[in-house]
Amino acid sequence: MFGRKRNNGITIKASCPECGDVELLPRQVRLVIWNTLEKNYYSFVCPRCFEEVCKPANEVVAEQLTSGGVIAEHYHIPEEVKESASITMPPITPEEVSNFVIDLGQVEDVVSAMKKDGRRK
Ligand SMILES: [Zn+2]
Image (cartoon, rainbow, N blue to C red; front, side):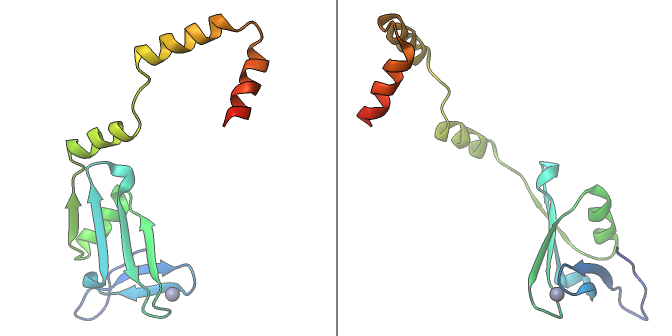
């Protein structure tokens, strides 16, 4: 997938989904490394169709790219981001759970109670 041959400069071989194998200079390739490995990717603008190609970069690919001269951009997901993610999806509070239990205790026919709920919306 990647090779480095050529007279003076190193060329990176990558493949475009449209054009197939293309050759790129290291500076044409962007390599993004996160502290969460599954987010790593590399991207480049295909020199033939000018479409941006973006692909996941596993450890092997990342190493091949960097050894080919691509400068990796390192990013870290800060703790704040993880915290704000938990704000957008808050866990169910004990209060909500107990309210739910009380509601269930008040209805005899759960299915018709749910149907009533649906009509109200
Ligand atoms: Zn292309």
